[in-house]
Length: 299
Image 1 (spheres, rainbow, N blue to C red):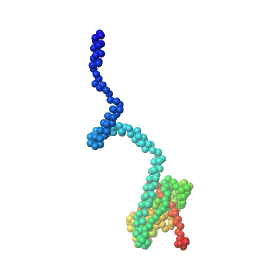
Image 2: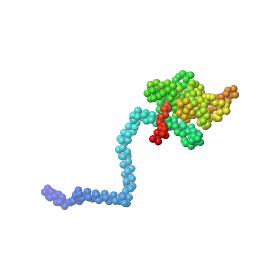
Image 3: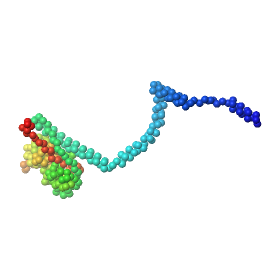
Image 4: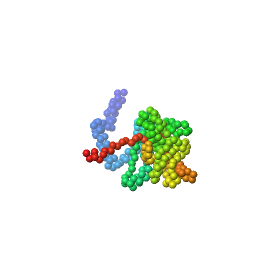
């Protein structure tokens, strides 16, 4: 028994560990830094690890997507549940801007012909700038013998009787009655309504009147020898002081010269979308410009 113990003790003394001395922590840190610097140099100068980096990027990509998922989900939820009132305001602003742009484009054809005539006389161009107010249609008058609508702007917004009303494509009519919060507008198609117009091609003046629901407008009091053609654009002449000059009223679609009458029968298709427009433009009075006499300027 004693001899067995002596044999085990002697065997333990004979067997030595393979690594008798473990490097210190500082030594291991230094070796790690040297290995890192060597790897950086090989990757930057020799481009040894591009394929390894590509593989690692592919492996890490799903993790990156998952990590960013809460933030993306939060943004998507915020956009989805965005305030409805804010969206409505943005939509209204865009519709208003689009309507104003369309109303400015209406005058291009009129301005082109007007510029030609004015260049011949004055050598200058012609510009019109009116201020407008956007309103919405509330109701339509159901009386079959009158063509009138109600809009959601009244005395509170400075609306006045006789104020011109347009839509995105042309003249609709004018205000006839003003309340505090709403106004009544008579349309071009009303038999009692008339608009002074001129032919855009040659400046010939006339008056357009309504003929009732679903009927074209009538161009009045033009003799048989008048210079008018099918397709001529009619614009407001500015006579009477109600409508500014140059806004589209309609297009001539038919001309008839009855021998028994002194004037031609001319039908006009309205330029405005009278049956479908939901937003209208109310033309505000032009701002007055004070003219200083030359004598005062010299002073």
